[in-house]
Image (cartoon, rainbow, N blue to C red; front, side):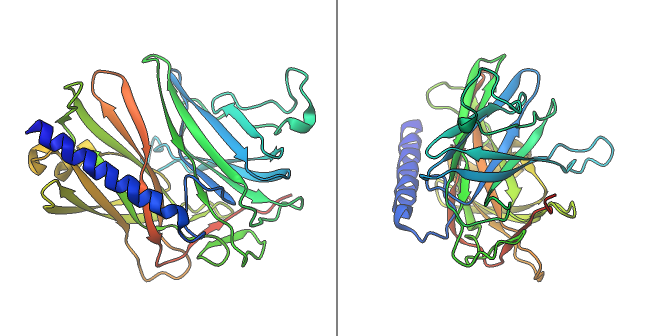
Length: 339
């Protein structure tokens, strides 16, 4: 029985990979973890005493690129329990075809510490606070700090667990810039200025409490979700209500919904219908759709990554989810004015 389940799981992953591969020829307006974008989103950056995140951002073009970046602290506040919503901004410059690399908890000094060529140095990056959990978002700008549709940025994040001596890595998500970009600080993710956020987020995962077929230890999944919309200028975080449609290996459906403000780090063990005892199969698929409302000022699309945790082993695997289609309701990112 376990062998058949594993075989079905392998087939499911293969189909998902084939769908993702077919997306290589998809319209340029779709978000991607493979193609460079004019906006780059790292959904999960975390830093603490026993863990940290190595951030790498690369310039895929043959010219120097400038970017405005924003750390968004999504930790629950001590009183309200709502996300802290503290934003720290900085600016980096990337030499053609070159990466910039730093540790989130350490950042980078204003000048290269080892006498390296200053022309190759990205500039100062502030360290995040101890205990930081949130996202990082970078936007390509020109020399006047106006947003431009130069699809230049790719990146990845490596989360290092010092005590467990393990690492996990995921690819940042690029949002492409398009010809209709007017260069102001209101970025429209509407397939005119920038590509739109996905209509469906697809997650293939073990159900919570399922036993890993190789290690024979329980497995569960964390899903980190960030709303595409955010108003940094007026300190208004993005929101989304997510409708989950969950299917087991027999394609039997179940559903639930979750509300997210600013930043959501969801432990799927806390959602009963994602449990193996209820579903009756090792693995399944969740199709996650942002709920469209009657609002016209901003949409409620999301970007996400998944992490599989194998209990008692210290092993955590980060995996990008799959994105399908464009949003029905355009998202908006409002940047603060520059000084």
